[in-house]
Length: 167
Image 1: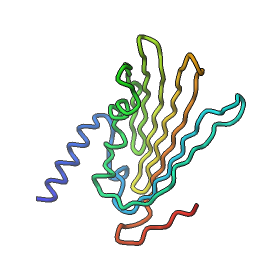
Image 2: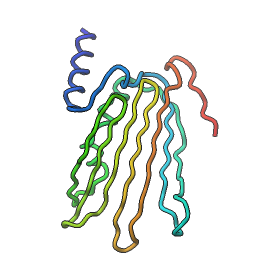
Image 3: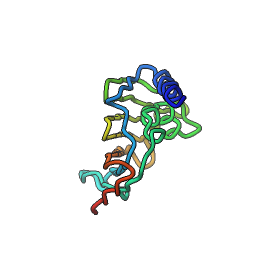
């Protein structure tokens, strides 16, 4: 019964992702995963490099459900997360190959572009990398580019002691 339920869940995810290929090589393996993320904010002074704003890394035991590819590869979900209710956003250039998926998003309000974003997700059994490059148009403060990078790395099985992240 468990195997048939697993098969049905896997088949459903594959169908939901449409053109996205999900294979054994690109499905992350359950276990202890360390997550780290950095947001690169626009420089305060023109000509300076972007300012990194890192999150505190953490290690968590993650299940099959928490690592299902659809959580990372759902362009519609990302669109919902980044768009405000009064914006109209369109997705384009959705590309998927084994281990890598990407797409673009363009949002407008009252016919004027408010922001655009490029998404990239790379996934293997032991690593997940997501990158979102956003270009925000603001007539008052000017245009701004923001880069967000998130990394997950498998550190071992959940019954093993998690590897401590060094600061």
